[in-house]
Length: 431
Ligand code: RM4
Ligand code: MN
Ligand code: MN
View 1 (cartoon, rainbow, N blue to C red):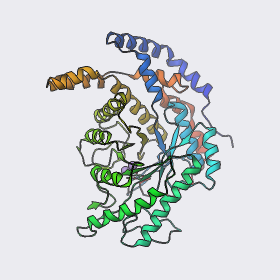
View 2 (cartoon, rainbow, N blue to C red):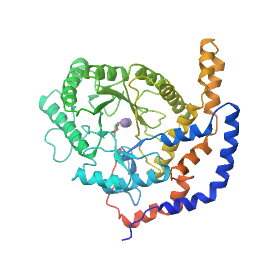
View 3 (cartoon, rainbow, N blue to C red):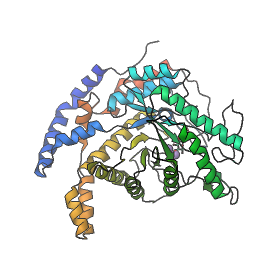
């Protein structure tokens, strides 16, 4: 069986088609920006520098609790998943890291997986533990909780699983553990809120102690689901309290979908930055809940406003500001690789646009109590078309000017369909 890959030469050849037009648009934009004393080359370098991790579960088709519609040619194991991640990376050049979910993608031989990744220019970002499902060989059930379960033996099992994730991650070269728990209640009275949180902290303290010197732990909050009445780590305040209690290696991760509709997420981001506890992000978008839609597809202005806070912190060199970026999306009706590429591009777009904000003018408007001017400064940046910068940045880094067009023209999915005969039974379920 021929192994299908998109060759660098193919990308370069495809780029030839659009190269001239992009160069023309880039020069035009350079002149426009020059009038405002902005050097386009700085922005292009910034665009080349932004990195976002891909979750190992993101390259497979997602689903709802009703159905999953698998795509032909889907990766069947962690090695094939890494191949798909490498393909995304090759085309967009901003996704060199992979975030593994254990046990979904537990490697038999982590050292060889690390080599496999390195050969493709990839490395491993935060490890994700999973105590929200029961595995076939698992002794005790997580049906009524994991790190906060009333039974100490279940808590211990969940703690040990997290420690195992750290151990595997150490061999892979990862430096962080992300803990999201599904613990909560479906009925008022089902669990005692204070006791549950105390147990969470006790369990997390054991996990925290197992962190190697240079590791961090990311606490991921979520207001509801799968528990529909209450969750133990329900919001950023609870998460912040726990991160403080645990110590300097613990910080709060913001998954954009884990808030009630209309919550002002950029404010949460600003607070966590100020408090020195912003761990990073799971980027996605949503309309109603934890929809796991593609980043920037529903509320691009919100994405921009989040990046506006991030860039402001970057420019002010705020202490402890070193956020980790990851996409956490469920690709139910698209080719996951296309969604990932488009989302990665959307992040870079928001990042570059946030760098266009005239910060001096914004501060002046704020100090002079001129809300309309303040908004217009932000809108000026948000409505700027930075596409020529993004395309140029990708091309200079060896990627594709138009990643999705190159991907489609290459016939990658068809190649993988032949190479990877379907191994999946029809199933429902989120990923
Ligand atoms: C959760 C949360 C976690 C992810 C799981 C699959 O809602 O976002 O980050 O690991 O879904
Ligand atoms: Mn998440
Ligand atoms: Mn989620």
